[in-house]
Image (cartoon, rainbow, N blue to C red; front, side, top):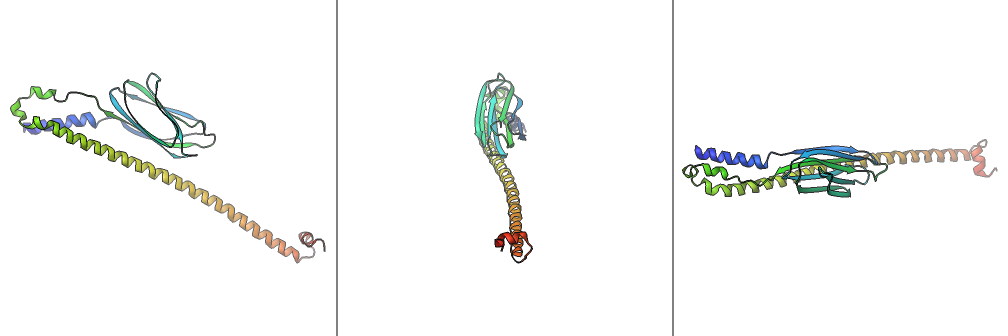
Length: 226
């Protein structure tokens, strides 16, 4: 029972260290010639994972800047469709995430972005074992590092799977928006072509009929007043 309790304690410690963190995402609309900033309070010692993707609007591009709590530029992109950034935070405070669409005079942009905070603070997790009798630990102490390595490998694979799933969702959303936009364009130009076709047909009918009518002014012009 004691070994099971110790094993449960190790699992909970690892989960508390690597699982619990900030994980938020938003879909925003940035108007033409607009500049929008969003603030998030973050703590130092953690790893920030940030990504964004332009779903719709114009040429599907946006400019991005990330500022520290002391207004220091940390990351920047210029007119990109998407981007991913990962960095270790060295300051605690309000970080500023800014999107700039000022270079687009007519097109608004729909942007998805996510902010994820991973706790990677280096701590000695084995200090609690010093107060536990060796008889209670048994061979569990020698297997702790192996267990942690397996857990971290599993966690890294889950992180990668989640990133792939998010990328697939972004691609699906982008393709859906593009498909709807193309559908609207096809319908619009189809109506224009249909209206032109009907107009040309009516004009041809009127001109041909006027050739056989003596009182028709259009007919007289076409016949050269004969």
